[in-house]
Image 1 (tube, rainbow, N blue to C red):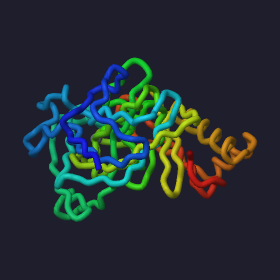
Image 2: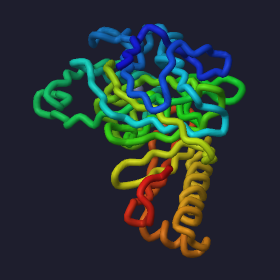
Image 3: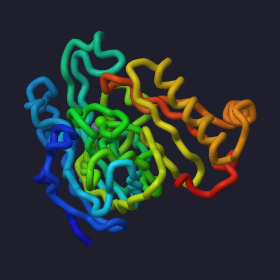
Length: 297
Ligand code: CA
Ligand code: ZN
């Protein structure tokens, strides 16, 4: 199996980036990645305002997937996520939903062992492994790795976990996949601005799907399909994600708009992935029992 070390990174998803690794269509490979601070925060004395933010949010890649062409879909199966033995959570003025009320920066190192994150002596959290940044190159322009969008990127969506598949539109030859930003735990919203940020290793399989138009990321697991939409406001994200969920039910279940609309309303949940990355990422969860087919693509 090809194993890609963490030293070749991008800070922008950019069609000008040359791929540094190549995988075959359907190949399983591993990627090592630092945490979102590029390992700059190792002790409680390392404070968020004192680190070099220019090397934050690096993503390992770009990884070319042979055969991927603009207009295709890249399916990325998340086969495994393994962590370092600790994670970090910083708070700092301006960070997260309550950032305006934070006076002093503060860093917490959180040990991770035996499937738990030891938040304090009395509070331990079952890990909910996830990948924060998973994306492909846009068609034109460049998008910072801290920002989510139609290309994926910093989606910070907790359903991007072991056993899930992420479908991304392909905009450039080879797709130029890049990945980073593992979280041992994170809730919907990523409300303080971070998950339990950790370095680690992910095992992925990348498959090219031809002839299936896709405009924005979709996540699928054994139970549901999630239509993601990243927009400036919750209202816009909700409109876009709901419209795509209804369209999915119209197309794949061969339903009229009224039937698809009420089926979605009867079964599907609207949720937020993250509200802290400058834009919002909204997701509509359509359970598979509402669908009369097995896999999204
Ligand atoms: Ca993130
Ligand atoms: Zn993160």
